[in-house]
Image (cartoon, rainbow, N blue to C red):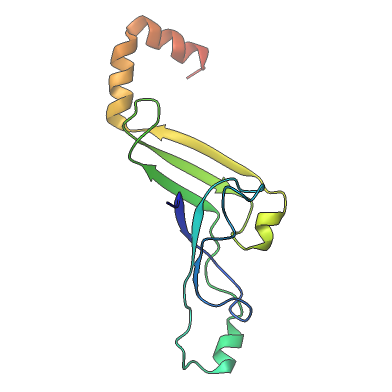
Length: 132
């Protein structure tokens, strides 16, 4: 079972359109996660070579992901994860050092329930501690 499915930019001259489930796996030390990478067809089979050359690479440049999880998180009922990466999703980028920033966001209802469970004095103390 794949963890995340993403769509990627790729070199049309070297790589055929399709699905890459081999580059990004838990066995790749640079990734350590399962990703299904969709390589969409940007041309039909009968597109002229001149048109294919004009757009050597795809038209996408994924750097930000918004992932929704239906389970897990602090309250167990799911969360959103915002991830911003310095890497492209090409095969080469899986082999080099890249940076990723990620932040998880609880669902609004879970945040309300958690705030109620804390109590007013605990909530104020936590907000003060975090300088919010």
